[in-house]
Length: 246
Image (cartoon, rainbow, N blue to C red; front, side):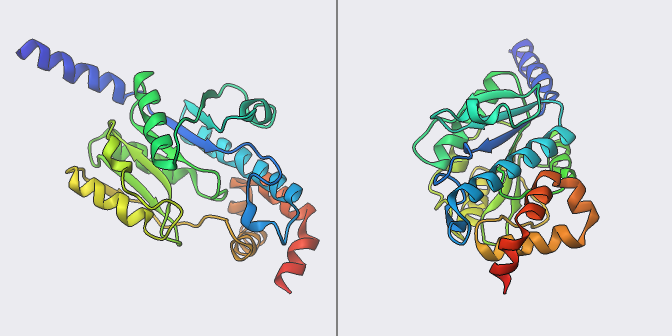
């Protein structure tokens, strides 16, 4: 029994030494992504904006971790995304009827592939600093936290990280609502998991969010370095955004 316990501890330590960042990505197809921005954007412009978000999210993930797994939506997602994103990424198709199930599935896949801790981000916060991912990775690796969450201004979260697989963490959560962060944090508490909350950031879902992003990128050189693809998109579409802000 002692030998088995020591073996499990050793195996856990080995797994914990292989952090992975998972980027949850929708294929940037017109009418399928950033629908709350179309109008005022066209469906095609919203899709190209989503593509730039995906490029910046993948680059940020690569800055923070050696292994990055792209969890893509079905229906040709990888075929569309792979030419847009850097080489050397890992790929897995998303599975599940809702976001909670998809999160459970990608964590299970990553853990089954020998990775841990597992940190998941989306693509809706293109200027999020890589240091947020690094903070989550360190806290999960050294045992400071069992779960990390990065809250967004609208009550959701831009990042979730786990040191181990906890399927119940994502149950009974009202996704895409102002309750998502609070309910996930509640689940962590019920599971007895120590939670580290990262600095608040913001998602870009609405025209107001897009104007906030424009203001940040045009005013902050560091933000432009973090999100170069998004900045290029804004420059080429700024005539549309000026109309939105008028």
